[in-house]
Length: 120
Image (cartoon, rainbow, N blue to C red; front, side):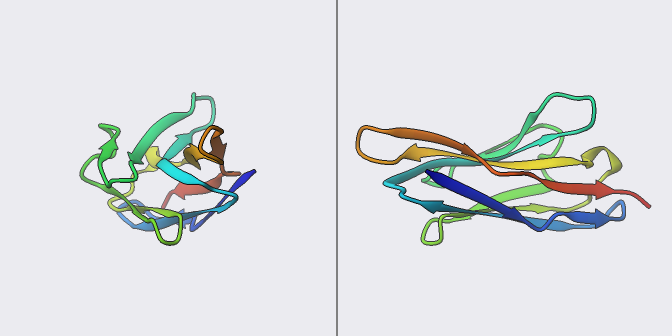
């Protein structure tokens, strides 16, 4: 089992910044891609940003240039630095990771979600 624990959500004014963290723990043989998704009320969950184990990144068009994803492989932790936040960024943000428990068993895990609210 792999557990993902998120932190750093909260309420922020438009134009403000927040940093989300997500730490993976458990019997991890190899951690591959880690990413952030979000789900706003009444909408489907969508990809925000993803980073591979080698550091390659990809962003949703709506956040490119405002959000930065990074990871610390030694700590099995992924971060999402969010700047110039807009009300439309309000959502529950979920951490996601995939990898291997052993050389032949893979996994995909989700965090419990952390609320981000952007409002004046």
